[in-house]
Image (cartoon, rainbow, N blue to C red; front, side):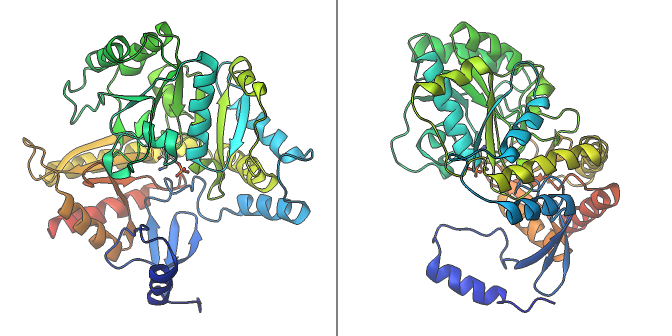
Length: 427
Ligand code: PMP
């Protein structure tokens, strides 16, 4: 049994010694002391089904034994910076990761986070093209350093510091967007931005195939194929931010962008890549990667032996346990069940997503689509009391984000939906 500090003691220390901007999801925050695959345990030994850990980095499952073993083995041998000596872990993982990429995407740069990965991806695009302008989608989240905060397009994540060189285009959001599911109409806005807001040439376009923080928004059909041509004509590079929707999560494909049939020039990744270990990466073609030889480029801990040993183990587990297939099968089942919940509870305005990255948007009525933000919190808290954890997102905080570890099974899906059903009935 756990004998460490209680939730109250931790909260007191947090208040005194940690950033005042840290937030917790629940009215009464949980003190999670242990994790096992799709389950989390609090200080009293109470078990919770984790419907959100996937976004918080866990792809294979909490404390997956293979990943732990790889970390322990590597830690026992050597942990060091990547910049001084040779080590096989970084080379082996880069090779394994490259085999998961389509086309000529095979040169890997490692970082420690998604923000760093996107900062690097955007810098590479700017260096390669000699242009500054980057286009990102409204409602996107790409990170919290100056460049990526510029690409992020929700005011609640942006501080008032210099964020230059990014234009935000209309979000091809089938539920709330101006043109519904007409991807071609949204794509036209990218053309307009290039024509009327730039010199006619751009550095690139960055997108999430499914927006995570923005509330599990799937981009309208035919949008990306349309934008792709426009960006190429303007000399730009296409950057896929796979931080949330990569690593088999969408089920139908290993990478989110593959569901749209396009081939990006640069792919950034983080979170699920390390199953909880801080790790990020940028993958691009040899020709584009070459721009970084113009100066010295390094990252002290990016790709360190322990993190890359973990990353490599993650890839092996995804393969061995057929987690992509599982994401597809269980995700499709879960989505079906959530859709039938929509017939029962009018508060559900939309159910969307793919594989094990699903969203449920709550509105006060279907016509006005007024966000039911308070109710979302209430249902979330009630589900927690029933032993089920889900996430929340979207600009208005009215979308449940369901992104469990990829080992989630059908019984878990049933339990999650039943808990949501019961909690909504109590509203
Ligand atoms: N891109 C996306 C799509 C993200 O969701 C996030 C984090 N929420 C980031 C980038 C930034 O990653 P990190 O927090 O590791 O810097």
